[in-house]
Length: 299
Image (tube, rainbow, N blue to C red; front, side):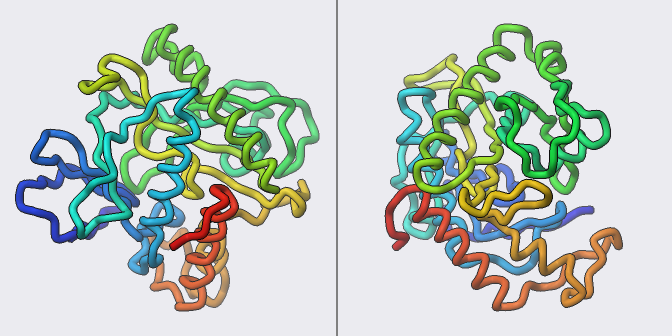
């Protein structure tokens, strides 16, 4: 499955496009740093949809930057400034280049998604044994570090074990990634719990700073604790036994798999455009997530 991604942001000519992912586009700046732009693209079932969600890039950037500020006592991050070209203001930051670790650092406090599928098949997630009888959406006995591979665009990440990470990176770096990931998850889960939210699981990406004041240190890259990388649930609606309503693209997924869309996710065909109603509901959910997490109004 190959998809062409749009990244026309009307940037000055000395900004060089490097890479486009599902949501973000990277450019080399004239100062040899990275401009990371968060688009309004939305993906589902490993497809990047033709329909965009207005303001999604600004919302995700704002959430991520808010969390980076909150996490300063736990981990440094790659952002150097939010002063960016006018055409991408609010949806972009300038970052230090990192040598990224080839591992998605996932932490799960609850059983959901691919973790639940693995549990049903093996009663384990990433090598972590779990008790029998847990339901979809159940609280885990303790938060688990469940790393995954970074899959190419359009393919699934694959859950791996902590021992696999040790083999890939060595004991010292694997241990630090696990420590940082679980510490950040614990801090963030406690913060949002006070706001009536559950942080069911999240994923982080880390790298070694190649320059700047954190050169040689392991720091947090990409983004942090947005609805695109984290499962947020409403605390007072939590009811194990099935999928929980979440603060992300749930409306998109539900519509695509409903008879109304006329789309078969196993067909190999691209999904159809989203109806205006689904776009509006999804945008409103992202805004609600921003306002609940930060306590601020989205402007």
